[in-house]
Length: 148
Image (tube, rainbow, N blue to C red; front, side, top):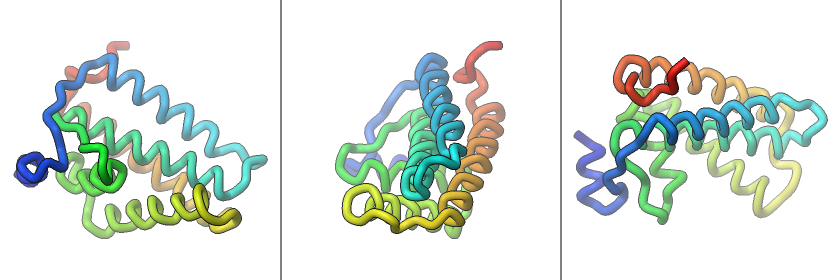
């Protein structure tokens, strides 16, 4: 399994998740998706908020699989791990990683790097990923899903 190799490289650490952790992450994801849908925010912020939902979905899947990313390059590793947790294709993971890089530019270096179309596309990707992660959790780790 690739994730074990990543652990051997020191990129991941073992982690025991819980229904409480999953519930907390799902609450962050829902908040972010709600906020990312607000038209009054700039495209940069909407893209960034949608990206954060994607990141938290990746962190949630990694935690459910029994891992957490090492601090160095944690965002990149969490996003890239989606291939091995929920089984996303390489092209979609590469797209999400490109969003990570674009978000970093707009968040730290230069305003106005995201268009409304960019923000809407990332929002749609985040919503799609939420459904895929929830389906995967139901199939593979239903014991971690909140009750009710």
